[in-house]
Length: 88
Image (cartoon, rainbow, N blue to C red; front, side):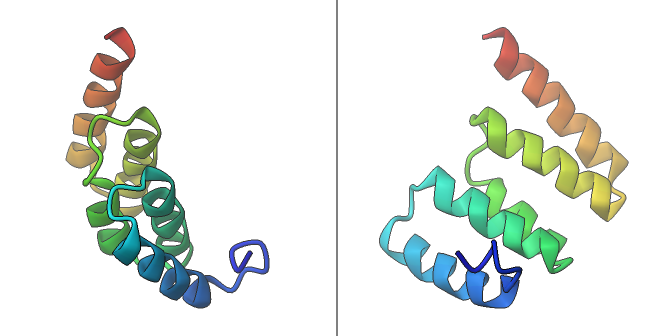
């Protein structure tokens, strides 16, 4: 809800509490990463997403995150990973 209202700081706080209770929730981690990226907190978003390197949607977000950070090497690494995931 906070994301829809563009209240990303509040969204981060709520999502972090949710993750404290549901550590393996891909959806919560992806939502948190999205809010962090909206706040230009890319290193934190990247760390959040890297917990799920075998999930294609998190890898897609990692690619965007690296692109925004200017990390071309990281971007290419995650693109290669996504291609491998798509083949399997």
